[in-house]
Length: 524
Image (cartoon, helix red, strand yellow):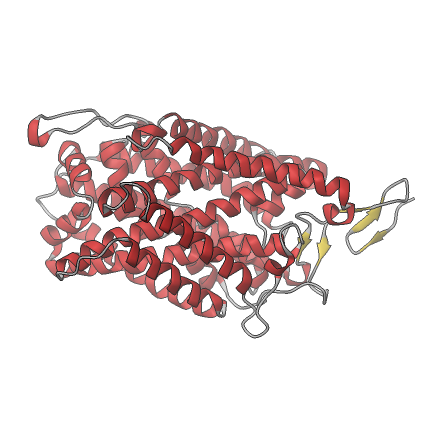
């Protein structure tokens, strides 16, 4: 005998409820986010700004060109575009079924069980926490460079902590404010990069090579070349492709804003496809323009290895004018700031989701009585980020902005988090296959919920393998770099173990892990 009530049905033994999902839309004991606060444009601003076009280009492209696949950096972006579009096919199908602020955590819990859901929920929260710290490093690198131009010489730690504090203040208030700030930054940075692209491609002095767009060449290593002052060290293609995927991190956040959007069943899919494909074209073209501006692979790679700060700014002045270069040098600051704020928002919402389900301390699941923001989770994320920045800032020998703010804090924290993201996206793809085959057999589709997720799993696991294999290449001289991945693993395994403990000691709580959804907002 079975009874249905509130998304639950009884065990055959008549003891404990098995929860398929819990609709929180009409429950008074659960704190809610600001429903209907943002439309399609708002969700796009919040997700695309998380991917941060100008940050992806000015911070990631030099690493890909100088330490990865060189001339074929645009091909790496094109390859990532294809794979992430394929991933989005199944992800959107799942988002249509489960509207939950927990995103990956909720999807995996529904598809593969609460234990794996808990493990990935904690790991993905860790990833977004370190992403904000990573962007603080990128912001600090360019901020110190700009301040140096005005004769102000500060430790990079100061602008990094300034960013942490300002993000905390803005995120404490209504999501409307965050969407407006992120949107203004996004539009401006996209426009300046389009101007940069046009100035390069329409100049007779650039060296545009079509073969740079061949996705089959994406995994070709940058070869060593030159000698003396023109020597270019060999790169590793896996690093280049990995940083291409890092450039999209944030686009998958659209389902996390489902509870706060006006029409999630329509808005989430549209935001996903617009962001992944639009960003893909934009990244491919803009990275191609940067290589073309330097005259070819050897020249571009040399600039990327020796002049991070000027890799884009120098050709912007040469092919455009000094005003464009100067404006770009300011927009990288607003762009990296906005990107960090988007990551802060997502990390806070993962903490909020876990707190709302009382998996983490329940205080994290509270919202502000006036602004309806997850203010306690947001403040918690602020403390975590500040601690990471301080650890890098005051660690032994970690004082140079070029090496430590950019290569170490930005680069290594990015790798630590992106490994989690790609592994989780692969696991989500598996969850999609299982979920539709077990819960929605009549809606399972050979492409949408089967083949597309399989392709996504294989491709992303391979990219993770390459990144882990060559991790020490980027972090030369850093003896503790492998511990970063051990931390990822410990958090994931700890989450799984924690879920088993809850299952044995608090079965009612266990049954709701990853099951809080908001059907009240699922208008079609």
